[in-house]
Amino acid sequence: MCGLCGEVRFDGHAADVAAVQRMSQTLAPRGPDGEGVWAQGRVAFGHRRLSIIDLSACGAQPMQDPELGLTAVFNGCIYNYPQLREELTGYGYRFVSTSDTEVIVKGYHRWGTDVVDHLVGMFAVVVHERETGRVVLMRDRLGIKPLYLAETPGRLRFASSLPALLAAGDVDTTIDPVALHHYLTWHAVVPAPYTVLQGVRKLPPATVRVVEPDGTSREHRYWAPDHVRREQFAGFSDRDWEDAVLASLRTAVERRTVADVPVGVLLSGGLDSSLITALLAEQGQKDLATYSIGFESVGGREGDEFAYSDVIAERFGTNHHRIRVTGDELVGALPHAVGAMAEPMVSHDVVAFDLLSQQVSQTIKVVQSGQGADEVFGGYHWYPPLTGLTPQQGVDAYARAFFDRDHAQMAQVLNPQWMTATDVSREFVERHFARSGADTAVDAALRLDTEVMLVDDPVKRVDNTTMAWGLEARVPFLDHELVELAAAVPPHLQLANGGKGILKQVGYRVIPREVIDRPKGYFPVPAITHLEGKVLGLVRDALSSQAARDRALFRPEYVEGLLTDPNSELTPLRGNKLWQLGLLEMWLQQHGIG
Image 1: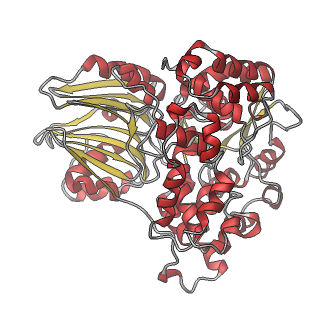
Image 2 (image 1 turned 180 degrees about the horizontal axis):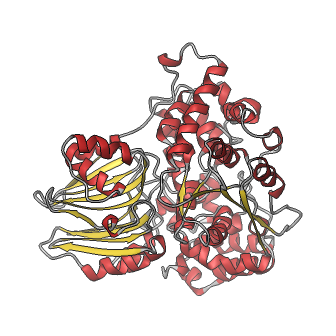
Image 3 (image 1 turned 45 degrees about the horizontal axis):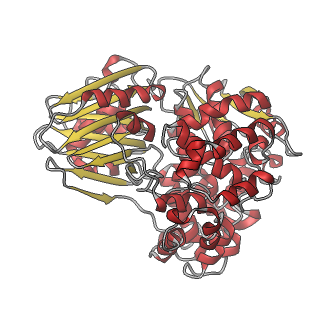
């Protein structure tokens, strides 16, 4: 788990190594254990290392293989690297390290861009071919690892975070109106390739991009599971589905124990992280470190779920850590949390994960986390209203339940110069629901959320906040084989028992019922869902600043109305609309934009 960056030139000039070093410096928190820069004419790579597998210097990056003519930088973890190493050894490849990075390099030489089909894990990889001058960028199937791009005539830069590209300089920081529309519609989700800045894009998940020496490029998507009923499962009973999901989840959790350092768990007390904890204990992991966080209650809303995490910690005898955060500590942490965001993210979970990661990173380097289960196994409230509908019929119901505002309401928020001519966010959903490969509206929504919302909200949130403290987070519910299996589960099993029905049935077999049979919980940070005091002051300052007035994104009368009654408008996902606007301005200002 690391941070990577680089520059490729197409205009006859040598790569700007100083710019690569500036990007690398910005990425330092992602990789506090080592750094490296490699340059060869028009190409330069930079890397920051968090040592998890092969702690020796042999695993350092950028990794060069002079014999094969390849140089690579890699962020992530390949869980099946021991098996791939054995296979490649059988083909005659010789290894000088025990790292998964070297396995990627040899695998690329053996299989070319098809190496992605062999990798089980999370990854962003960039490879340079010495003989052809070609540069290849690859991102994992579920977009767990980020890869941001900044292209100008004659040059391509890439990095693990958007702020790193800003540090390199010469980025068009104009706000992208399409991305802004998505941000204000989709609860801050901005689908790839967009970002909120016109000069920065991101490589989509499950994508390989091949860049030729003349700057031309081509890309293809290498993975996209259909959400349909498959013949191989035609005779499955409900119990058969439970058995299959449990077996696949066991494998996913076990895979993510591969490391040369201990692996812990972020234990919220909900079904998902409790299942991970139980399965690790079942597999014999002793003295498992688990971590929970809680906040002060605000506005009558509770700020912790320790009662449930304690049940799991006691049942499975974990080395449990309760982390309590005061209101003052929360306010003090906000600037760091905003700075850690590669893109603006409104979920109050961001601050929670940032504070949790800070504490956890003091005692451990790797944790497993429960992100992805709601999207993959149907845990959200907007899925049941889609029952019985075709994908084409489901767009209205999905938009009503998920969108923060419609296009007409958008015109009441944004100044006219920032409005798109059409409802680009709804059009995006319509195109996605119209794609083949989804039997029902529920299937289409699960596919959309897995491919888009999951990538650019909960997964990005966890990557940004954990890596900001040099902590690696692994997400077993996003094991691609488990996701493929879940995509085939009949919707009625997914939505049973209030949602995540199949996963709850699995849970009854391994964890206490009281953790499952309770109201659905969220990672609670009441001070952000209910704005008052110092947090409200920070939001007010950001929206009232000269930078915000000069940018003029939002209609003054709309902002003033929200500031007068800060908690009057909530989104369907229980987010605060004033926080949504304020967070965007705070992020732009903290990163020196405008």
